[in-house]
Length: 231
Image 1 (cartoon, one colour):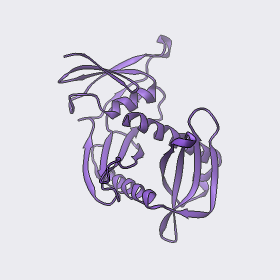
Image 2 (cartoon, rainbow, N blue to C red):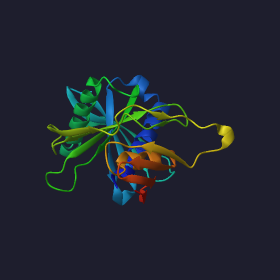
Image 3 (cartoon, helix red, strand yellow):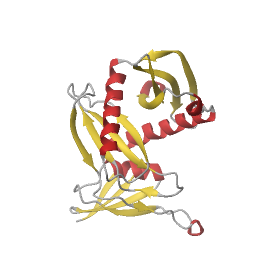
């Protein structure tokens, strides 16, 4: 389920970034340009590789191993830095190209965008999927609009397709804390007959169910579970 994978990679990157912030790495190291993530299933963790430029080439300068669960992440400053593998280079290239395309848009819905790069599909010609996710630092606010996906060739160099997930920007404001935490919210979705991976991601991110209204009918998204309610 791609929406759950997106959440796992995004949440791991956030925890890893917190580790670097605690050590003031972002303030002290001007080399840093971003990160890529990789699920290590047999070790039940996500590797977050922070990329910087050394001698004109991208290299891994920090690594944070983020375990699935509540255990503390493991921080490593890599000296010397490590060159990117072929797979890492492909995902980093795709990520950088997608970021450049995003910056060309005049209809962005947030000042901050987080990237999630999903490894190629299992097929030999599988694409690299780069999600650019509109974000906010306001507690309780759901950024429901303004998310994009960019698809690239397996080497990360050739753009194959792109799509928005909404036609406009819209946020769901934080509820009144006096009324308690909401268990669900509702959105209208016009671009697809069914909910997308973005709805799964948002449901998991905010810990709430989402009622999704489409032309085909009404749906309930509860984490990875998607149910058709009525036409």
